[in-house]
Image 1 (cartoon, rainbow, N blue to C red):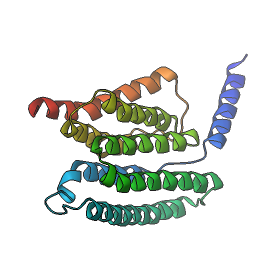
Image 2: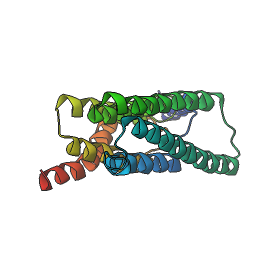
Image 3: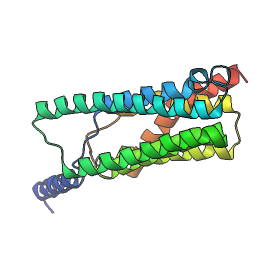
Image 4: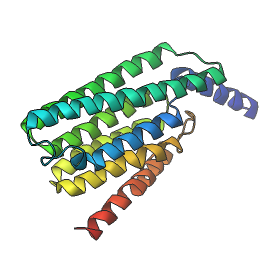
Length: 227
């Protein structure tokens, strides 16, 4: 096969891949949601504690209202910024994008309702793990139609969420790991995306391991510093 024919086949493959993965995740979306989730997880105990709101029902309602306000506010800001970017690129909201957004909203609703219920049932460790798993699922689903790296990182976040439960870590350690996973991991992921380019599995594995090292190292250092 001549070099020209090989180049044509590669170009056709790239076009097909671009058509299948026509959804783009914006950098500002990962930064906004990552920082917001990281801060909420880190300051979870300082926002509404037993000293401020001793009644569980009051805490549950307070958390429900807070999550609705924060998620709605970030979602509106994210939508506005995404709309501006799409207008600048002369793009429209695709059918796949709208469907993925519906799934994302469903996952956030599940997390919000579980947080509300956990105020009555207890289990702060499980609540953090649930949010991490839901975040990982959202990234994985998004990655199916956009960037391969999102699939790899989504699975990694799911594994972190399950792993902190299996290891039975202290809540303080869980909080540091979860906060770093979202607060550092998602903004870092925003700058690791490569616009849906096809890469080998070894390259994606290297990216994922690098991401895990950057995310877990601060949390592990904090655990060693404050055992």
